[in-house]
Length: 98
Image (cartoon, rainbow, N blue to C red; front, side, top):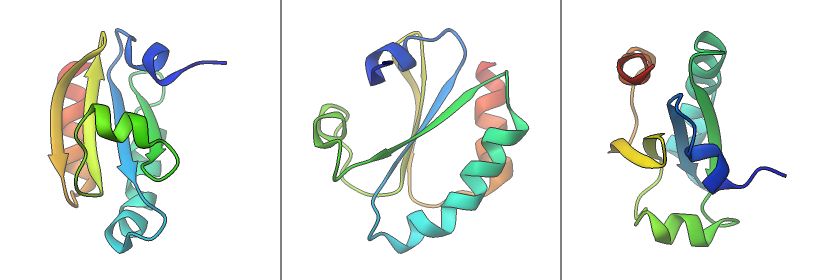
């Protein structure tokens, strides 16, 4: 099974959506994140990480607010944003690295 570490080592950009089930803005962002993933299929990867189930990952990257979005490439954090975003901003950020 692929680990978080394996996934973020990709040379393609990986958007990580750190979220929580109880978070209203996270729920609002969910369809946007799904659409971005669909639009960038093959160019970038999108994964969701529940901070309550993956506390180690959330702590390792000092995620203190949800949603927090991060773009990883070759294991390095290339971009980070906490809070809601529109689809175009997310797409543009990922396209810069793909």
